[in-house]
Length: 102
Image (cartoon, one colour):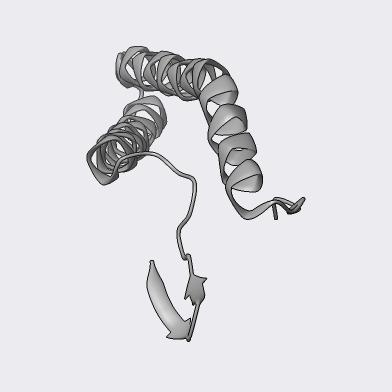
């Protein structure tokens, strides 16, 4: 909150997750993506040289990890939707105006 004129206050903010939660998901995707790329290169290399391509198992594990992380992110968004709605309604009632969320 910042006073901009006599009797007027400007309120700035954003709705979003805690930076620690955001960073956890960012690094999770980075780790799983790196593991998946490594596994894909390993598996294709093993396949081309005629060896047993066990790297595909790692690739499958990375894909499963991605799906789990993706599902957790969407579940968290769904759990937080009511809180965001309540926060926005509280903000609107405080300024006595309807504000569109972008």
